[in-house]
Image (tube, rainbow, N blue to C red; front, side, top):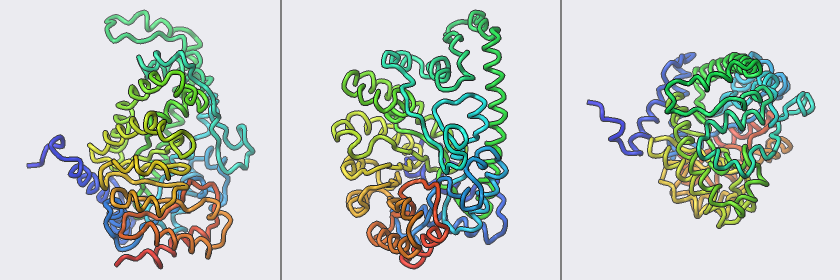
Amino acid sequence: MEQNWADLSPDEKREVRFKRWLSPSGVKFTSPEAKKAYQERLTRLISAIKLEEPDRVPVMLPPGFSAAPCCGITLREAMYDYDELSRVWLKFLNEFETDVFTGPDLVFPAKILDDIGFKTFKWPGHGLSPDSPTYQYVEGEYMSPDEYDILIEDPSDFWMRTYMPRIAGAFEPLKMLTQYNPLVGIPIGHLIPYGIPDVQAAFQAILAAGREGLKWAQTCMQCTQIMLGMGIPRLWGGIAMAPFDGIADWARGTQGAIVDMYRRPDKLIEAMQRITPMTIRAALEAANASECPLTFFPLHKGADGFMSQKQFETFYWPTLKQVCMGLIDEGVIPLLFAEGGYNTRLEVVKELPRGAVVWWFDQTDMAKAKEILGDTACICGNLPASLLFTSTPEETREYCRKLIEVAGKGGGFLLTGGAFIDQASPDNLRAMMAAAKEYGVYK
């Protein structure tokens, strides 16, 4: 009789998720060889996550937008033409060998951004040069300090009636809606604003954006299924954020959040605690739907020098740890992308359970990371994007050799870039895989 999920330990739940990951449902492999390659690559990665020695160091070519220029189109073309997006992604994966990769989901559908009047991004041809290789976030204070109580009381209502009308022009009429009261049995008063022409126009724009979003999502899903069928596992099944980043990135802005740490620390902490269970729930739903047990966390504001160690331990780490533990308890593995340097944070973050997370480092000293976290967590990263773009294959190969020598001892290491890349030398990408095969063999 199958054991009840609730009765399983976190380690047992993780093993169940690993088995599902190794045998993904609905995937049509192109050949028996592709199926074998998928399982070999994924077994290699799972061994590294479990701090064991696989046959060799697994490799992930750094994700980002480099598939577009490497395959002859601009990022703008990829953002507006979903068929082209899928084509170049699959062409890239056919031309470059890698053990694991990510789908095209981070190449956002620009037509939606155009149609809803999105204000917090600039992208090629919209605020940036048409041939820009990347897009940019527009920093701003999109929530005022006196709105903490509104956010804390009802985050969903705040998102719908306050936040979205500020960051997307098409949503502006939604501020005329009333707050929903779950105890009202006859919601006539709540329905009246939906008769206002501007509100109806807003919902028509939202419906159109939803239809466009579905086209983009279906293309991304089909591309990912083909990628899996080729025998290439994907690295993550969902994305989450540290609660501090959720507030500081999207709502208060960097400056506002820094001020809040001094002027209203209790409200900042209460808001982060309020969104923590919602973050956990959303990440679990994504992991369950994708059958991929890793959840990607881009950690934007916890780096060395951004805040003091005391501030990190007071504002950043506690709720991030709660989110991580909420996922770990359900067998999901946080993939923590520590942007910038985390050299002063390593002693704090090592308290997470053994073999339950992956730390992806940008500029952290990998020797120090291996020394402090090597018995606790799989580590990866630190290969500079600038090196992959400007160096020679020999220099790339040598850098990879040193990384493997320092961080790959005893297993628990994935070779990849320290950051997402917009452009890279094709020869340097090939040099990464060559280095792993030459220097990263364990047995």
